[in-house]
Image (cartoon, rainbow, N blue to C red; front, top):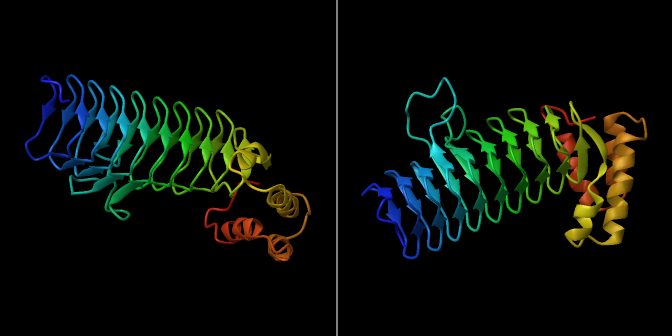
Length: 254
C-alpha cells in the first residue's frame, strides 16, 4: 500500500508489493524491490537501488548526497541488498568519484537507530551496527561483523568478518577477523568466542583461532614470524586471519 500523502517521483521505480508510509519522499532514480517497506517521513534519493524485503523505518535517509567537500553534484550511487533493517534516523549516503562512485551494502544487515554509513563504504552481509555507529568514508565491513553502540570507524579502515567492537570503541586501524576490540583507542581483548559459537564454528576451529590470536598478539615475535607460525597451524580460519593482517595498509589494532 502506498499512502496518499507519500511523494513519489514519476522517475522512481517500485516493484509490486512495496509499501510506502505517510509523508515519505522517494526521488527520481530510486528503484525499490518487491516487499520492501518504507516508513513515514523516510527520504530516499537516487540514483539508489534497494532490493527486496527491506524495512526502512521512519525518518531514515537513504541515498543522500555524500558529505564530502569535493563532491560537486556528479552522478554517484547507493546499492542496498535484500532483507536489511534500517531503523530510525539512519543515514546511508551515495559514493563519490574519489573512489568507485558507489556505496555498496549487502543483505540481511541490521542498522539500528542513528547509524551513519558514509560515502564509498562497502558493507557485507549479516552485519549488525548498534545505535549511533558511525562509519567514515571508504570503510569496508566484512560479513557477520558486530559493531557495538557509538563505535566510530576512521576512514579507509577494514573491519574483518566475525569481529566485535565494544560500545564506544574508537577505531583508527583495521580490526582483524574474529577479534574482539574495545576502548578509546580500540585495543584487542581476545577473540569473539561467543559470536563464533553462535555461528556454529566447531570447537576445533575456535581453538585454532585462539592459538592464532596468541601467536599474533602474545608471542612477541615480529609480525612476519608470527604470520609464518600462524599459517603453519593448517587452519583455514587462521589463514584468513593471517592473510588479513599481511595485507593491512593502515595497520591493524594492536
